[in-house]
Length: 275
Picture 1 (cartoon, one colour):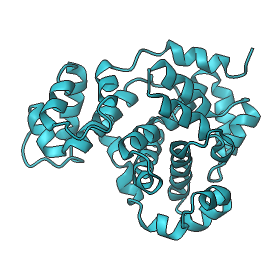
Picture 2: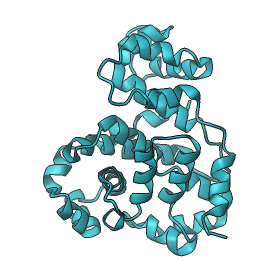
Picture 3: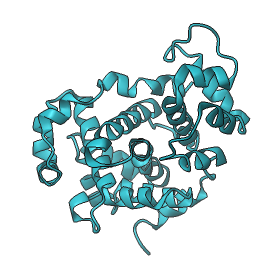
């Protein structure tokens, strides 16, 4: 029996991803996608549409007047933000509330990873929309770990205080790392193969064959989120934790750090999405 089996079993026990979210993934790379088509797609799922409208009326979206239909929500948010919002709502709504699990802190960090992945992606020739979804999903394996082995997951959290240390502690304490579990969940949810492969590669981007540029983007985005959360020097932190990877990718840490969104803005939407 593999050490990942209990987590894989838990992943396959979760409900399927909403069909609308699956269809949204099919729109990646489409240049002809319109706001009307996107809002019509979201409107097929009434519960999802209601949450999108609730967000559009939140202080975070700052509407000038009440938004009472998806057409107006689409006009307010724009195509990219509306798609990202819908995917975020779909992913966040797929997981149960866990006793003792800080959902707000988790999803704030996750939205930051998604935002950083999206920002890094063009530098490495990766589709920003795919990178955003990858960043949104990357850490969800941690939830499955907390569901299956809450004591073990709590022990990991007690030890993994330094930036980019969690994967190593998970491997040592639980026998596997959360991106591996995320890959199994993504397989269950019928995600594109490129994402499934990238989640597994994020554990050790340079050791994965073939090399996954998306996997590298996701690992770097997570490392950046760790450093930004602790408010420590990002360029120096990247050199200390991922020097071989940034050298392989020919990235300049100072240049990269200067081109990233503000951390507070990157994670700000979590508060509105959870209410």
